[in-house]
Image (cartoon, rainbow, N blue to C red; front, side, top):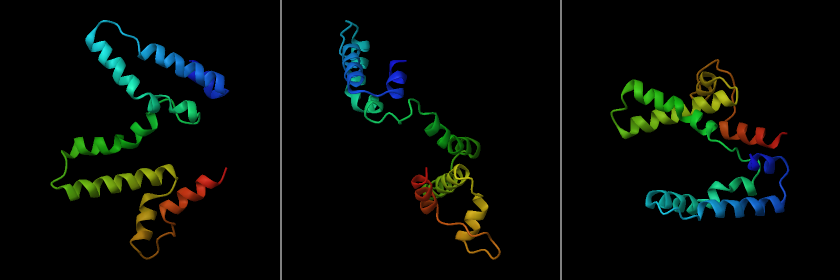
Amino acid sequence: MRVKVYRADPTSRRRTELRARFDRIFRRRTGFATLDRLLARLHANKPELLMVLDWPEVPLHTNGSENDIRCQVTKRKVSGGTRSDVGRDCRDAFLGMAKTCAKLRIGFWDYLGHRLAIPGCQLVPFLPSIVSMRCRSP
């Protein structure tokens, strides 16, 4: 909850307090070897775990990333994998493009048709240029 409060109003004082609290929690020794190793491992990842203190806009969860790969995992489970590494790379590339098109609200088949120069297909710019245009606009 304190991190959510910090995100709403980030101040250097709160940032310092949260870093100190993190150290108090994860430098603690419990006397249980497994728990002490876990705490030490988490403390070693402090920069990544406290990235939100330097970048308050960073999400506090990974739901977006997990959602991005869900279709690839489902496809792999249903199909039982691919016959080659090249096949896997192609499948992953196409699923990635389809997911990016969906996020940008662009028809995947329109995008693919334009890339393959199919007659009568809608003109669709390259995905990197669309992404950079949308990142610049508010």
